[in-house]
Amino acid sequence: MLETATVAAIATPLGTGGIGVVRISGPDALAVAGRVFTSRQCENISGMDGYTCAFGFVHDGQEKIDEAVATVFRAPHSYTGEDVVELSCHGGVYLLQRVLQACCGNGARLAEAGEFTKRAFLNGKLDLTRAEAVADLIAAQGRQAAKAALSAKEGALYRKAEAVCGQLLAQASHLAAWIDYPEEEIEQVDAGQLREELQQAHRELTLLLDGYETGKVVREGVRVVIAGRPNAGKSTLMNLLAGYRRSIVTDLAGTTRDVVSDTVRLGDVVLHLSDTAGIRETDDPVEQLGVELAEQSLSQAQLVLAVFDGSDTLDEDDRRVIEACKGSRCIALINKNDLPQKLSPEDLAGYFPDILQISAEDPQSAAKLEEKITRLFCLGEFDSGAAMLANERQRAAAWSAAQEVSQAVEALDAGISYDAVCVCIERAADYLLELTGKRASQEVVDQVFSRFCVGK
Ligand SMILES: Nc1nc2c(ncn2[C@@H]2O[C@H](COP(=O)(O)OP(=O)(O)O)[C@@H](O)[C@H]2O)c(=O)[nH]1
Ligand SMILES: [Mg+2]
Image (cartoon, rainbow, N blue to C red; front, side):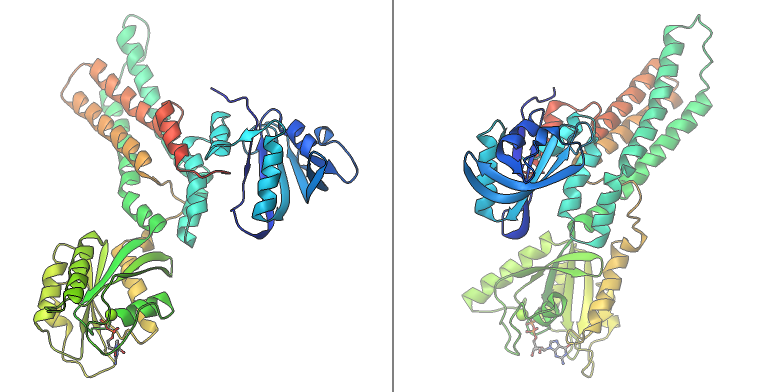
């Protein structure tokens, strides 16, 4: 189902910058570019070799729009696998829209979201996991997320899925031959060896599935809620982690009322922080709403930083905080350790598995917290070069494949016919083919590319 239209889009973000690129792809890319671009040497672009460029100007009919460099890629040696021309113009919103209009008035149509990468997929330049890695690479917010996306783009997951799938298909075809042609001289199926190979495939898939949550944390960051009674030092901690005065800090209880949010990077971890109102009994209706909001946001957090004032003993409000933290993954922070302490880790040990004594006013506390969070989410063991499931679609396919493999083993152990074993193995392989996109439905493919934006 290969497209034959030639498409164009602005491939750089819509904003002002030194350079902005309009990309044209399709069988008529050079013809379209030839109508809107004239090189200084008046050389026609259609005569240019792949991987060459020319300096000139873009025009719409007689009207010059901008100076530009045209880079030519010849099929199949381009991102999409088609003929591609990239017009690098000055990076102004108006200019780029004019250049795009000129392309569309001269034989190209507007590219849909993700259409360049979709064409690359349809032309066999990328499998589905590598296409998804392009989106992840662009969306990466930190070093580890970017490295993981790059290794997926280089085929780490693809190769793993291919290897397991290839092994399953070999087993299935051997079984099928054995079942269908019993009279032929086909090597006998060794049930013990088959079982061992199936279990190996299952182990590989389980390993992938086990790493999913950690990978998700690396890619998407952690939703963290800072909670505690008024004046414990929540907003001071928020500001320490944000690196600037994000929340108002005063010695008046009840200063923070709304949820104050920010995204910060702590070492390799991205934290989506929410500073909340101090949890306490109050008659003030506005503050009351803030307290309710704080308690609600705890349930949506992946991690709660429960802040306690170390210079004071536990009070009723602290107990309410402890109660609200039940069921959430928490780190208890005994704050203000620069002051004489009345609260010790033993006082909280029954409620929290992880306790740190810090001062939110001391920049070194951020490093302590980073170390703790890294350990809690197993990020230290994270190998960004390993094959990794990068989204729910991939996870679901790998999970279904693993289920089918374990059913094949069960069928084998139960002594059910090889027919049934073979069906399970084939279904497992199908799920892996869906994972890489070698045998994915139109709906799956469309859904993958609907995540992309225009120009990708
Ligand atoms: N000595 C000391 N004071 C702190 C520390 N953290 C916060 N404070 C003070 O405690 C008061 C309340 O802090 P704030 O961050 O507004 O608390 P919140 O109500 O929990 O947001 C302010 O006067 C802060 O300067 C700390 O580590 N040491
Ligand atoms: Mg506050």
